[in-house]
Amino acid sequence: MSESSKSIVSIEEVGFFFGEKKVYANVSIEIPLRGISVIMGPSGCGKSTLLNLICGRLRPSSGNVKVFGQQVSNLNEPDLFRLRRRMGMMFQSNALLTDLSVFENVAFPLRENTDLPEELIRNLVLMKLEQVGMRGTQALMPSELSGGMSRRVAMARATVMDPELLLYDEPFTGLDPVSLGVITKLVRELTDALNTTSIVVTHDVEEGLSIADYVYLLGDGALLASGTPKELLESSQPEVRQFLHGLPDGPVPFHYPASDYRGDLLEH
Amino acid sequence: MNINPVTNWIGSIGSASLGVVERLGYAVIFLLRCVVRFPKVIVRPSLVVQQLYSVGVLTVVITIVAGAFVGMVLGFQGYYTLVDFGAESSLGLVVALSLTRELGPVLSALLYTGRAGSALTAEIGLMKTTEQLAALEMMAVNPIQRVIAPRLLAGIITVPLLCAMFTFVGILGGYFIGVVQLGVDAGVYWSTISDGVDLYQDVVNGMIKSVVFGVIVTWIAVFEGYDSYPSAEGISSATTRTVVSGSLAILGVDYILTSLMFRF
Image (tube, rainbow over all chains, first blue to last red):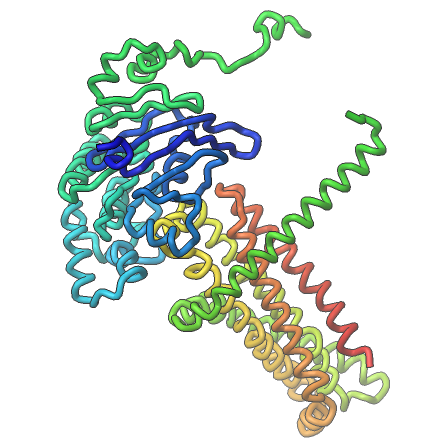
């Protein structure tokens, strides 16, 4: 079997610029079908940009992004929306619609994209909420939920259409230890239960490595390393060691580039 | 690189103008993208009705209160000016014409800008900041169709109705001061209005103004929200821009429309 037929997302020699600023020079990543792929890297290395490229909210400056074998940047809006109905995305800020209740938030993708009868929508929503342990919150408004609860509701909403591809943007950020444990467990469980593919973008090394089937380490606009968590932990590549072990100095210098320190102090 | 201050100055004017034109062009494209979605919004009226409530119904009270006071002030000022010429019997006409032609459309639109326009910008800006608009896109829902177009349509429907209320209450306010307080004859007050106010020249033109203001202000409000920089500071400056440029646009466009409508 060829490499591309096993992968659900292929990022082929992608370059991306925000105005003048280079985010990627030339990155190629193949995300395999099924399982959890974790994309890690320091803040500002363009991890979230990668998710936006995959879901077609941004277009690459060069190269191709293919999802389900379709080239995302060539799609018109109806085709892009058809593609997105097969994906679920969880945002860092959870992005629950603040004017709708928890139940209506989870029901939203079904109401907008399907003609299912009300009874069935209700059952589906309650099942998804039960899966993340949030069935009791169905009547609450998003403003009444804690951060961890919102994230679980956002997970229920992301999975309500039974997507083939789940995207998580920084799911482990800003949570207390208990919520963190719950979310980590849920990412694993939902991926296995739905027999789906998850792409998790994170800078939390411990959680990322603990749930990953495959890890991709980004840095400085390029793919630094990839492999199973075990392979990366055993890697002797200095950039990988610095990031995974959180060393303050290394290939990523402690100091932001600056002029000569002595000269700067003596200038006046 | 030329560092001559004069050419630098001219250059900065040029680049600022280009920036303005570019943003204006973007705003026009944005408006067209909204208008194209109107048919799909109309077949789902519940979205528009919700917005009619939040931009319209919630603005009614301040419109009525302001209309009453403006009408009462017109009653006083009109009476004391006219009474010097023994023309206080024309008070009704003065009040009604000022309101239908100018004060009704302009002031109701200004109040709408402050109350509903600022709220629209802040709401949409916050939805953008909290990634709700992005989430809609990811759920295969077009945010322009689901969020922006219903608000724009509701604003366009709302402003002329607010204008009509403002004008009506203002005429009652003038009646209260002129007739009840200062003793102008009630029959004369109403008959000068019904004789002197022309349906097309005054009422319809006033309503046309109001529709135009509704389009412009709501357009500015939703555009500023959609285009805001996604941060607390970005939302605050977008809201300010909505109120400032909305108000100035109303006054400027009012001058243009008046000079076109009442030239003959």
